[in-house]
Amino acid sequence: MTTETMRELGQAAEELLKERGPKYNMSNHEAEEKLRELQKEESMEKVYVCSQYGSRGDKATNLELAKFFCMLVIEEGKIPICPHLFYSQVLNDDVESQRAAGMRIGLDLLKDCMELRIFTGISEGMKGEILKAREWGIPITIANMAVIYSEDQAYYEEQEIVKELREVLNG
Image (cartoon, rainbow, N blue to C red; front, side, top):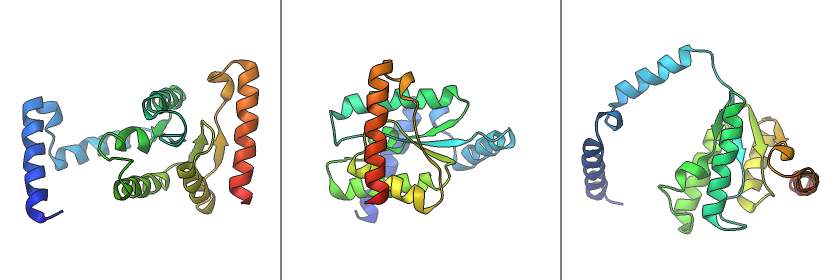
């Protein structure tokens, strides 16, 4: 992408932000100040939400599930980090360069998390996240399936995830 194209995109984004009003029109300095204020408060633990996006099932359903998983983390008083929920809105997973960029961003966000929590069966993209978490010493956990499924289904789902996780970690 040329510098001229980037400039045009930036101008278009600025115009959209102005149209949407002041709450969307915060300068970098104001945003940094707001973040500092939040950080002065008691720090909340970040949990990396590791779930499927495009590999199994349809993407829309997987995004709805990701929202639900994030709410579960929020209810624990923790901050969910779910890159595929946000970056799927600005990057196209079907374009390899954009998918790679999204995966890189996700891994960078993972570095700041205290835990990687698995919510679904393990996809190819999730494998990379899991292996990096292990390499970086970030604890890997499996979500409480009983919160998501019926008792019988929860047991089955958990056993499947454990089996897949063993394959990834020993593979």
